Length: 360
Ligand code: F6P
Image (tube, helix red, strand yellow):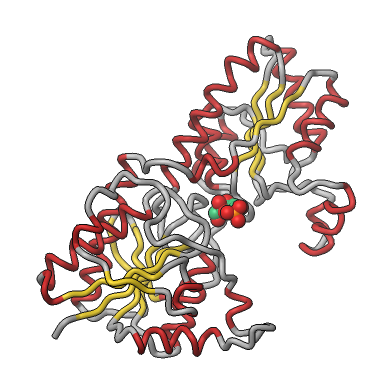
């Protein structure tokens, strides 16, 4: 029997997607025999599955992509909450995805993505498709796995940014606010903040008090350090905003003409301390380029585990790292449960014990 395996990448891209695709594809050819497996690349995530944009791949398509950033299949955000909604185009998206799966005679679908991708993967699995997820995101916020591919590369890039900001902050006696991606989860900011030696770390999980941040800058200045580096997660909010519902918070931000808190933090610290401040936003640079050695190894291990799961006919799962072992979790158990940074996370305690301020 010739197996047909569909692969798609959905949501925001990150380094390591191609390395994972390569790991899964090469292991499929190895485990089933090149003549007994057909890999179907699906364009632009679930959008390609809805619109039947698929292509039969050759083994050579998976060569030379280990180090390549982005995704050879392209990706798109197709929000989960819209999957069950019929919009103006009148397309029943879930039915369309099931139709493509049937038309393409797929035996299984690999979905590489983050939280939204996993929710739709679970939905398709509940609808009877053979789905296997692979956890991707620079945010590392997927429940049930200690790590996702893309995370450590982004940590390396963000750390390099913070390293470089140190010398210029020092030369000018400035406060540098560096905004790091992560809307709901602050793990990327926490890791890179620690790795880059940030003096203050501001996370979405710990609402900040601007006075506390300003005091921390002043305290450093009094102790002879006329510059400070603040690593601020893009989703950070203050203690007043924390009292509001998400929608009210967004409305308030829109009224103030801001999206993230970084510029306000910089402005208010300057006003309160008299110290000059600057903001640096590396943004999508954190998602670009070649995966780190760590992520190449992780992606390869995850991809190969996905191929093994196909062989074991173990569907409705997503690959995960638990206690340093590659394993899998049921999609239904993890979908829709983001992994946030708990107050007692070891790195939070480590940071507090060395005097890093979280602005709380
Ligand atoms: O989920 C990954 C992520 O990089 C978040 O950290 C960030 O908020 C978001 O994607 C940005 O996505 P977009 O590609 O839509 O700008």
